[in-house]
Image (cartoon, rainbow over all chains, first blue to last red; front, side, top):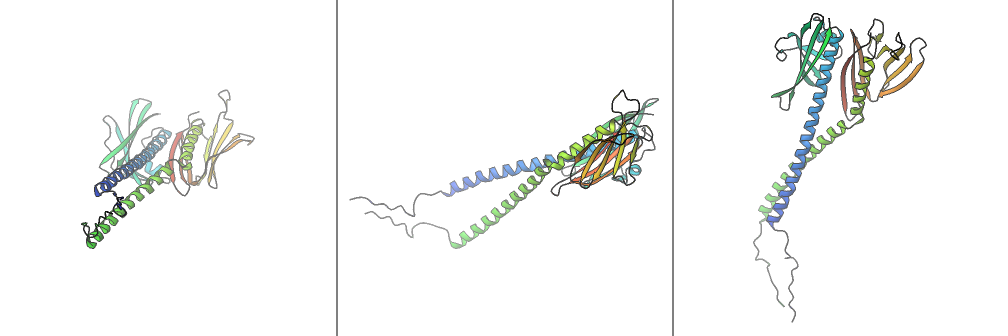
Length: 153
Length: 172
């Protein structure tokens, strides 16, 4: 006589532990991918901010150089028709330099703080400096970009 | 014939337990799905912006403007800018052997394009005319002393780039 065991409906399926483990693996992969994408997007945003900060420093320093490093240079006057710029409290001036001014500049809805300073290294040569800084992430830390140029006076 | 009857002998979940489990699982899955979808959307937007033609055009416009202005003459009357800042024109030497500036470079907006044309001073004959970048949302030029500024905004509808740059006219 043949033994006829019907397994239909009772075939061994995935146990709860197996299902939970599968879900766990899936979640780790999904969250890992999401974290990677988040960090990539964050790095890209930081890079864009840095590019805008560098652009601003180049613009401020180049314009100041174009005026021969004059002490009368005021970005809030010369560049106000093109940039949202206003006087502000800037970063500390490096030791040995004189402060020209500090300004808040809004580019793409982000505020960049710029500090302009100078000193005469020769009787006919002036060293000009610009520091542009902007908040990183939650705003507790700041990233800064410093640029130095020279102008004949 | 052996028959195994499990009917009614297996411990299972009650309807209430199943309903609660399904409800909580649904909420969890929906939450995670929305998080992942938002994450993917933000990443795609950032990625598209970084590798869009706008980003490439921004780099080109910045480099070309600085290169052109740096070779220009800074003497009085060698550079001009429109009153509304829509164009800028500078003069430069075609070669070191030439005594006076004999070439003219002009950046000008034409529709959604930013054009750079080079011509011969005196005759006005156009030598080259090239499109620096497309998708120009706004552009303004300015002259301050020996320096020239460009304030350019590019926008192709999906991403935008702002280019604020400056260069000094280096030649006498």
